[in-house]
Image (cartoon, rainbow over all chains, first blue to last red; front, top):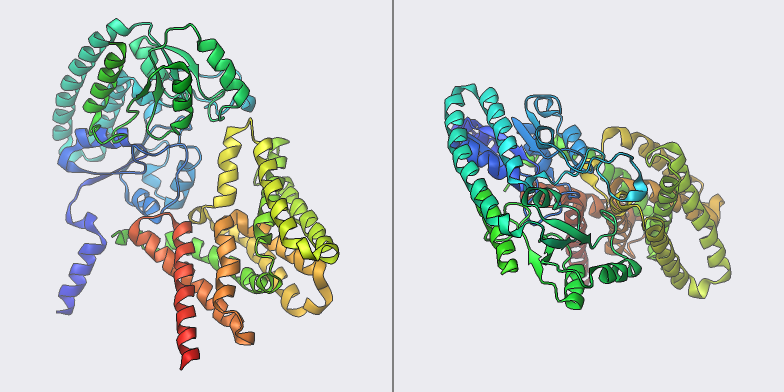
Length: 299
Length: 253
């Protein structure tokens, strides 16, 4: 009887022992979804943040530390996006296998070309990321590049299932590349369309789709708008043809609505990651909704 | 349920930080409650924060000694001012403390108007992230707590009013950077409130309420996967209400 109780308790305490899955800890929802796509049943994926959170800043929970401690692979954007919490989390978790530089740590931004690398670093310019703009997931081609690296890491860390990972990657790559081509074709009519954003988190989308940023509600990244800046922005937008004000679900909607009321430009709620609205269930639906919202605004 | 987060090496340093904070804040909080100057800790914490922010606008490293000196300096200046207020403007003391809090808080915002990263730093300073505490940060805090406790319990009749305010400022400047202003406020006020009018044994009862709140809060935060600081605040309040109900029942019998 006693033995039986101990056994059950042990199983409850360490579910990892029951299934020998690879444990993946993702900083952001888009990488968690990608790991699920590429790992399937072989991996157990946890995400530090959801699609409704601002990933720049999170509250510490004990489970975050526990999950990083037991993780086999940590997938984050890097480029200082998680600078205010990831280094602390890695230090507290004290898991050598997932420290930067190890195969168990994947910084997605290392495998794509970063935009907006500042030539001079100056705090006065706002919350500038010294390595470049880290919001890389909004160019679907970047998702493809990160997927290639993630597949390699999965194969290396869990070589027993390497063939399964390779097959899953080939399948994903085929579906993803053709989807990306489809979206690009549909966006061609929108080339040169001008949009206003809240935070400079959409530059990769704009670069890929050929859209133009007509202005941002934040005067500098991370700095809330002042009244003089907003009136200046209003004057600047007058007479321009603007497709919409781009807004992400985690951002305060009041500045976007304020501008929309005064200019009659519609607010476009665009998904910035998986789970940002209930409809965005994976990476495919994320870009599908993104593209169709932009198409709808142009009509 | 997250049993795997129930790990002493994750929760241990945070619990030690809680014990250090409680050690000084429970006796100081009883005094604060007796004097009826409840919001003094918010004012002093904001002043300490303002000192750090001032230092970081000058380009000093936020955890370095000069920035810490600025924090202590600002808090002690506030303490000396509060002593003067108590002596000369006692009838409006609480109102002046409130104005001091608001001025210090908005001064930080003005200083940070063009420094968004500083915004995160300010938030960390005030909301606090008790889980990120590491052992290295606990050493200096332990030394200072010991000094404050010795001064408080053995030199109390010598240090007088200004002594109380200075000890209070020193403790809050350290604790607010360890655990944040919400936990500092709870650690001061809630145990003292639950055990008021208990006389000498009230101190030990207050320590017990505070410790029970921290332990229960950490366990719940690990189990339910919630941010640790706010859960501790609520646990401590629940423990205090239970103690209050038990005392009422005992009084009625």
